[in-house]
Length: 410
Image (cartoon, helix red, strand yellow):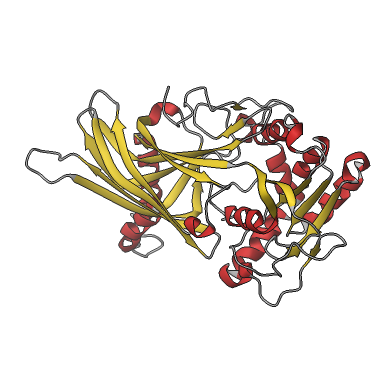
């Protein structure tokens, strides 16, 4: 659901004039100043389509976990005011109403707002307490501060689409002191992986350019550039956890306390203990995320870890063009850096250091740069991640089933 932007006062400092939520009159909003217009137009157009909302709703791990996190924590909602940041179809707003919320402001910037209004009107017992506000959260006004923020602001690798910035903006502008956020915490986990099949698959994509006579044209001069371009794509798929060969590095995002600028340039130091007993080829790093709902009655995790039921986020891998070779258990160091850009995503920079190949040689170093906006979607078999309605397998008190609460193999 779209609600992206960056912090900064685009409207008066109070929550807004009484009389219900409304879009505030602005000349040029903070969002519009910092986000490329063509990117924003495509973004809001995409999420304004029912088919794409259905894609998210039918991710039953996602939807079922949100239902459990909200409805099974009634004491966090009953009689209180709630804002749904980037409401999309309004499903989370309806969950909040089911949990007893007095008033829910469903803020949605895309054309999906009219469908959210239609859906809440078709469920009057719940919808009578929901007000759909069509506008960016950076620009709207509502007549009160709220007790609870709810949102599904996660993109690929947690931060893609940069909607977390809007979630933090809503916290600073609309949430009462001591108010709750659902979710409150996010974590990104990073581990080294070894996958010869994937490495060869990415390399083979450039084989087209090894043709000295393509309709009478020698295209081989573009081969190296093509290889670089394919290795600059992050790979989004669901992989078997057996490809992981190290411990994890974890970056924690505390949505309740973090600042918006901290999302502009994110550094994840890497110190990964390779656990494979014999020679291993390190082809890059694998990443996934989880979020935590700190409910008073039923604290709940939503995890995208390998080994758990697959979500529409899948997992993500950065493949190194130059692998690192290790003879056995060792330590890999380096960093994964994410730098925000105006196209609502991030440039990713990976550097890894491994032990020397031979005594008295320098350590191995390999690096790569990737655009999170332009992934290689390797696996889109939805039948593998659709679950029966109401099934919230993959959520619970902590991630389990192959990865522990700290993102490590178990």
